[in-house]
Image (cartoon, rainbow, N blue to C red):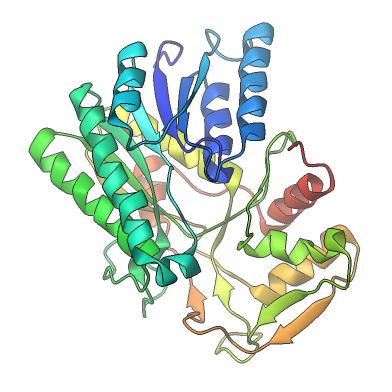
Length: 348
């Protein structure tokens, strides 16, 4: 397949996962058009992506060269979104733009249903009006709630326990119904825990507040002032008493989006896929790995459990392997090492 003339619209590409995915897509030869309102994204990431595109064109590293355009707009601004589709020949969409703070979604559910679900519906209308019928959607393992059977299959009951998971599940339902009604082809990707940073050191994790485990473990090494890593609970029914989660490197995740796009271009039907490693690491294992990679004893504070933290969440990746040809390639050490490199030398 000649990718040199294909253009992908990426929403939310100024964010952590979206920026890594946009970079990977350009490296594979796609032209990338970005819509981001920068409410959570970082203009520094956009500047990096502009530089990546320029370098790929200058060196001929990507097949046929690549283009990159950035539009500062909200996905619910139908006039602005419609103009983006008119100005660019978009072949497919990768949709990341969303709020993703679980705790905030519990306190302010409406904010999440408006921003994530309602705005996506408006965006999809403009997308379909433009005749674009391929989309890769950034969903979440939060749609499963607290599953009892491990590893989690895509057919597991969908019972989110917070508005973040609920808002994503509603989008999934919209996509499935539009697939039947208007032949919209979707690859719905349910993430588990994402970590790590770009191998080139150009992109990394920048959140405020930061809720992901690896950067929070590393924070005391740069924050100073007696900062500690808080470990919530050591009495879970797991081998070392701490929660076990399935982790995937952000670069592996970007590659999964690429593979999902290729399948859609090849005519695959709408599908739902877990993206994980089918294996888990405990919080204690992540902490120990961070200490090993940094060569430092990270200040640790053990505190009681947080309400609502299931002991174990591990994905089955059998379907993604069989249908997308996807399996994670990078280890927990790779995730921590790249994250530590970024923390020591952030580009924005």
